Structures are given as structure tokens and as C-alpha cells.
Length: 253
Image (cartoon, one colour):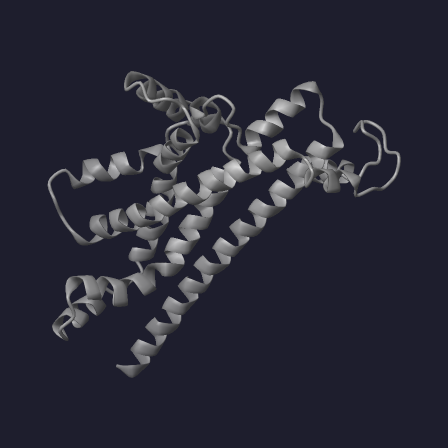
């Protein structure tokens, strides 16, 4: 499964401008990436979209997960199903529906429409991860804080939020990777002259895959893999901390 990635990485060090024949080792293509204005512009746009989408999703996704776990209200099951629906809907359906919605309201396409479209699926991923974290938290800790005189806001910020932080960070890193790598939704909702990094890669490979694209792909894969690994380590560390606290509490009683 990882063989194509290894082949791509191998040819990113090829001295030949054509990937079909090996002509020696070089780091030239990696150096050229940092002098390519279109690549840097696409990277800037991708990072801007990812950070904005993840920032908004972190706030609303956390509040959504807490609300669904702690409160009962009419239509809760229906809302929960709708909230996590973007996880099941194909990207092409989200892209087309978002484009139709923007056209219906005569909203001009720009980088901000890409951000709005990315919030749709980032919100679901953050909410799902935080919801899983909520299932491992003792709800009596908040009740104890309220009994000791804390306000609901203080109990949320000082008691619940620190316990949710590993899940929030893990969900944000997952959403960041998905947003950074997205091509389909961004291509449908991007305005004229607005390119993200995956869109720039796709536009260049139409004329053939060259070593500079191989190098760019290797850097993109490495960056997303590192972010995903950090997110998984944070999530695992959070679970281990919960187990340790549970064992300690059992020993006390």
C-alpha cells in the first residue's frame, strides 16, 4: 500500500527532470520549491484555510459535543444525526451542494467560501473526537465544582475544559490534516485566482509528473503524517492519564 509513496519519494531525489529515468542524486528540486511563488502562494492559502476552519470548528465542535452529552432537548437524536452527517456524505456531494447554495444566494467565490465549506466537515470531526473524550470523563467532577461554589462557566472552563483538551487538540489536528489535503471541495468553492496547494499540484501534473511535484508531495505527506502522529500521541496520552486517575481513585476507596 505504501509502495507508491516510496517510489514517489525515491524519484523526488532524481537529477533528471523526467521521472522515468534515474540520473543521479540531487536536492535541487527541494530547493526550487522555496523559490516558487505559485507554490508558496498555494501553501499560504492552504494554511490560512486550515487554521481558520479548524479554529472555528474547535469552538463550535466542543460546544456541540458538550451540549449533546450533557443536555436533553427536543429533536436531539435528529440534530445529532445531522451534525455528523458530513462524515458519511461523499466529498463530491458536499462540494456540489455548497456550490449550489453559494450560487443561490449570489455569494461570490473566494478563499472565504473555501473556509466556510471546510468548516462543514471539520466541525463534524472535532465534535466526534471530543464526544468520544466526553464518554471517559466523570460528570460528578462538575457537580462537585458547582457544590463548592463555582458558576457553570467556571466549572466548564476550570474543570471540564482541561479534561477535554487532549480530545480537542487531537480532533483539531485531524481536521487540520483533512483540510490541508482537501482538493475536491476547495476546487468547487474557490474563486478565480485562488489556489490551494492540492489544487496547484493537480494543475501541474496535467502535463506530467516532474521531480519538483514529487518533492512537494513528499513534503506534504511528511507534514500531514507528523501532525496526525502528534494528534494520536496526544489522544493516547489522554486515555492513559484517565486510566491512571481511575486506578488511583479506586485505591483510595
